[in-house]
Length: 202
Image (cartoon, rainbow, N blue to C red):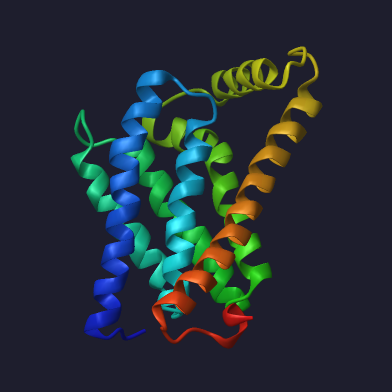
């Protein structure tokens, strides 16, 4: 997919904003040990990327934004952080895949893209933990259940309820991000007087 110079500049701006959120807010959330910090960062990043998709409604644009954000993550305090960088890239890939599959931008496409991309942060430890850091899946699972039980106020024995509850939280948060992104993008495009898909202007 070819982009004009203006489109590349727009995508770079959205990618830079996502990257700055990761670098600044990510450090704060990590220092404060805020629960669901990964989900919060993913939600904000995808909100930015989805709005960018409306401004440049072409295949690959969401991934491009994610790549820029990932590269900016290199400047995080403490040096290269592989986990968050992988998270950014895969979130952008998932969102890009969903939006490209739908083809035409729509509220439903944005909701699905947000839901699946944000939920990746829940799944990621089970993938990157063993592959990149040599962690045992059992240890990751036990930590997952322990943190989930504390967050939801359930007994650790309620494994299925914990897993279902966390999945519901992430999916719902992601879907809301998609819907909010769709609404904000429409408002911003109208105020800027820019050209956008007809659907977003309704």
